Structure formats: structure tokens, C-alpha cells
Amino acid sequence: MKEAEILEFVRSSIGSVWALEVLTLVRREPKRAWRFDELVRELRSSPAAIASASELLERVGLIATVDDHACRYEPTTPALDEIGELVQKIYATKPATVIGAIFESSDEKLRTFAAAFKFKK
Image 1 (cartoon, rainbow, N blue to C red):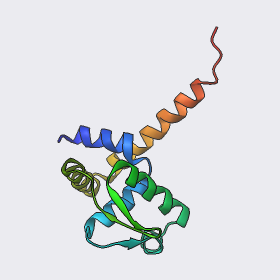
Image 2 (image 1 turned 45 degrees about the horizontal axis):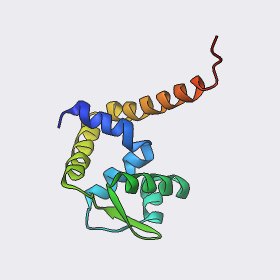
Image 3 (image 1 turned 60 degrees about the vertical axis):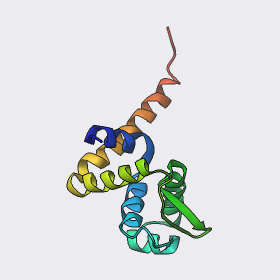
Image 4 (image 1 turned 120 degrees about the horizontal axis):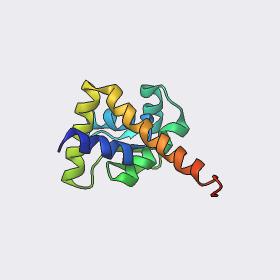
């Protein structure tokens, strides 16, 4: 896959820097079930941010919830595993590019929302 395709996946599916951080952390030890409190501590985040990021990554098919308070890297397809690997590699070498893709998505959502309130002539 090309970098542009990976960045488009990040833009459309990752949604937050917290989700990106959770993904890269749990992917380092794919057999480990990470408790949410461990993720909060390790990433210096909040329980709400970790819960939201985990839900998003589970919906995308990159992680699986082990029980109500833990998750692990468990992509639902080999293609998603490849995407997870490439996201991690690009993030390691070009963090600003990957984070920028996430914020581009947020900017587009805000523009779409704002456009809904514009009056047409």
C-alpha cells in the first residue's frame, strides 16, 4: 500500500490522536490484553479518551475487547493487520504527517457541519 492510502485510512477511520496512540501501543504487544487503566497510565490519558479510542478502533476492526476493561490488537483481516503495521511505521518516521491527517478529517467534519447552517440565496 502507498503512504497516501494509509493516510486516507487514518483520515477516515482513526479519528483521534488518542486512537492512534492506543493502536500503536497495543500493536507492539499483540498477544497482550491491555487493561484500560494500564492504557490510561501508559499514555497519560483519561478513562473517557481511552474508552472512546478503543470503541473506535474496535469498530474499524483493529482491536478486540477482551472483557469490559481490556483490549488487545486483533485485526479482523490480514489487510487490516497490514494497515496497522504501516500506520505504525509511518507514525514512527513522520508523526506530524499522520497527526495532520487526523486533524484534516476533523476540519472537514467541522466545515460540513457549519455548511449545514448556511442560508442559500
